[in-house]
Length: 109
Length: 115
Image (cartoon, rainbow over the protein chains, first blue to last red):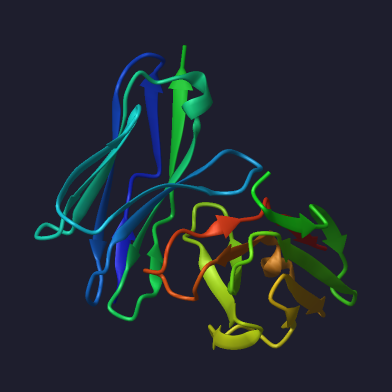
């Protein structure tokens, strides 16, 4: 079957760096998305990776290794507003999105 | 403002009630989706519409009935629901109805509680 694994919850300190991992097993692969969802709000797009490597967007970076079925989201200089859930979703061979259950990130002062 | 608006934001209904959730997108997209989000579970895709035509129905019970009158509006009609249907129902839109076709734009969701 198809599956996405990501940690349920992580805690980090304001100003620090945190890495949220996502591993996927899908029938075929056509890219991977990361979304951010604050409590009570809509998920919003963060990144899309389809090629191996690191893509940086300000304080947020996303990495993909297709051979390892692995991605991570790296958040630098953490701010309290980064407290949210982070959703990983892989695109399979039928261009369907396979979602992880999300990682709740708690930022402490 | 995400460009996708859902109403109502909160809904409490009994198991014998009939209610509807509404979604409107102001982005000119061709595809619209209903997702169910339950705590600590992956998003569950319920229905996909592309240019007002239903292209996917993921074995959703018939007590959920979607309607897409035009490319900007999507409804989810609810009747004789069960308590386990209590969840956050998210509407989303995208340029095309394909996972690789670009990002999804979500509404803030309708929090449904079935008593």
